[in-house]
Every structure is written in C-alpha cells, then in structure tokens.
Length: 165
Image 1: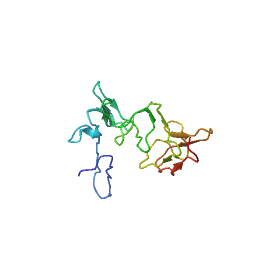
Image 2 (image 1 turned 30 degrees about the vertical axis):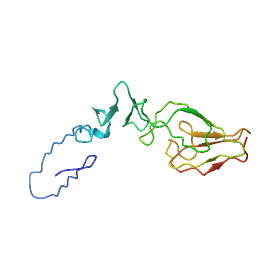
Image 3 (image 1 turned 135 degrees about the vertical axis):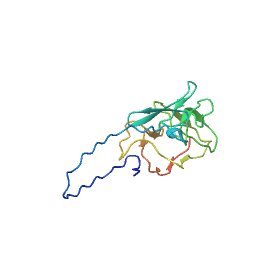
Image 4 (image 1 turned 30 degrees about the horizontal axis):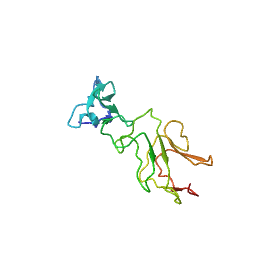
C-alpha cells in the first residue's frame, strides 16, 4: 500500500472467532528536498520536520513566494524611478517569480505635456484579501491627494488621470 504524501491509511477491523490483533504503527518525516525538483527550491533546500526551507547563496535574495532566489544585479523590475516616456512598464522586482519582501518602492510618472496617464495591470498577485492591504499593496495617488490602495489577486480596474500637467 502506498499512501500519497499527506494521505491517511484506514484500518478496518471485522470481528470473528479469533484472538484479535496488535498493530504497531509509526510515522516518519518525509524528505521534501529529495527528488529531481529539489523540493521546489531554485537553489538550496533544507529538509525540516514536516516541511522544507529554501535558501539562497550569499549574492542572492529569496523571493516573497519563498522558493526562488533572485540575483538583484539581473532581476527584472526596479524599486524606484522617474518615468517620462509616453509609455512603459513597471514590474515588481523578481516578477513573475515572486517579489522581494520588505521593500518600499516609488515611481513617479510624468506624462508629456497635454497627455493623461492610464495604468493597466496585466498581472496582479499581492498578499491581502478582502481589502485588507496591511502588508503588501500598490498605492496610486495623484496630485490632488486622492489615493487608491490595491492588493489581492483580482486585477485592478484601469486607472486614468483626469488631466495632464
């Protein structure tokens, strides 16, 4: 009998005219790091009781997802910027492999004269559910002081400025 990881075994006892039985059982920790996928870790996998921990070499940082090491010198995305082109992209550092926790990043978008700005999210997955954007979020604010904070996995609506500078 081979029970899948996390599965259970059922023991059924049917009475009859016999002495009965004694059954011993034990459980053992499974090595989640064993196998071709290295436990799902991109670099170092350490087996722990009931799970695994991923870690990175000294020149890398673990993504927010916790399984991918990101080389900051070649990582997609930046953590700040002043954007003046008529179009472009902003991505979280490490996208799409997860993002780096503990960052506070800021971008300023200055449109060319007589142009408005539209923000269209192509993909969106930040911690937070039901509007509880306490830890991870994107906040978009305008010069008039209005701001909108977004989190969760639902792609936000298109945001468009009402006027140009």
